[in-house]
Amino acid sequence: MSRGVWEARRFTAAWSRAFTVWVDDSWDEPAAPGGYIILWIDEASNLRRSFGVASQVEARGLDLAGSYFAFDASPPPIVTRSQIHLVVLVGNPGGVTIGTRSLDTEIPPRNVP
Image 1 (cartoon, rainbow, N blue to C red):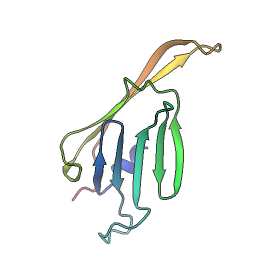
Image 2: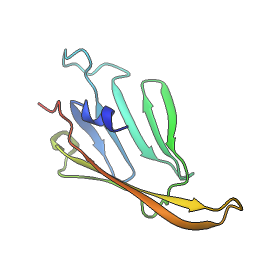
Image 3: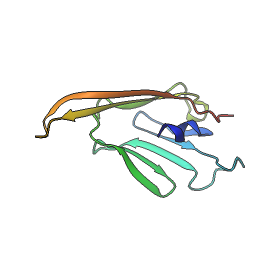
């Protein structure tokens, strides 16, 4: 998940529950279809990632109220750092939530011109 953001050329959308980055693998500058990574927190409490036509769940059981993305600037093309804060609900075998665990990471895209 972090590697895709780290390899990005720029953010093209940035919200508290979703963002899109452009990955220019060929370094030829025009944005090609399928050259975007989208990361979002869906309403079913999943962290999802799509690249091109492929989409997958990266994490399940997120706390929707506590998980978010944050950025150092606005509008998206001038973002140079992103923060991902995820809170996962931890339950017992009976399905009762007994606590939370959190993940915080800050990712600077290395390929920003």
